[in-house]
Length: 339
Image 1 (cartoon, rainbow, N blue to C red):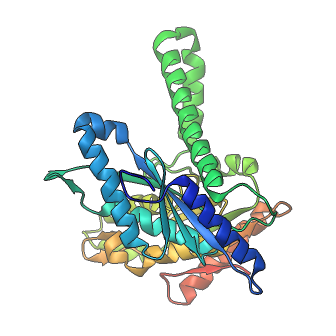
Image 2 (image 1 turned 90 degrees about the vertical axis):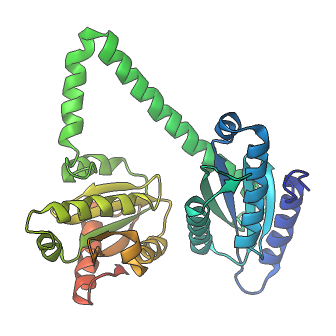
Image 3 (image 1 turned 30 degrees about the vertical axis):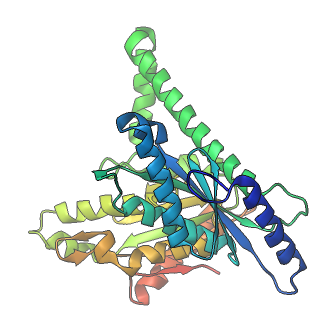
């Protein structure tokens, strides 16, 4: 047991997973379990901005909240700033939904420690078991590998940004080439939303690793939105920017592109079409809370399909577009999966 938070420790977590794994493999019916790795972002910053006791209190409170949000789960502290939540009975899609719920609940809640308002942010990584191969590495190690890979990708991006800045500031001979590269990047971006434009997406698409989920999304009632505040198109512009941000919130590894006037494309590696459909439909359950312009909630219709190794990307896009049309015909504000 972890002495600070009272949560289980890594050894206890792995022992519990062994039990879940044995039960799943010995079960007559298909059975799954899942793990959500919860990472407290900026613990060192909390300790420096406040004090060490505040950081400790945040960790204790985080353990309490995880127990409260997942009363049937096994909660363990597995690193200085990380907790693992092991939940029996969840398949791959369900544990992804549970991870998204925990991230939302923890990041939107108010945190007051010792009478002070403390900024708390968590990131989550969700994995499911059992592995199809016996004797595979524990889910905790799998989740930590994914977490490290994401962190390394961000460091690589930051290093590239710094390298470009150095060229801009100190290497005048490189300025012409930098300007040419910048012009290409600008030509691939939608100036309103900042998302890739159609050209940028089509140039990037051949590099996508299959399989991946592909969603085509079309905003509903854009004409009504544009007229809602005096025919100045500002309302429609804000709706487009807001929907782009909602689509980006589904996964940090997703690729969002503005395909046309009020159409977006979303590519998500590591997701199934069913899980993406669930994520998008969950954003439409309470549209007045997620995005609205004045008194008008902003909704969208769409279709989702899987792109496999031998798929023609154009045909896959057409499948998603057709399901988006079917969603419009069925009454809008819904997402359908292509068979």
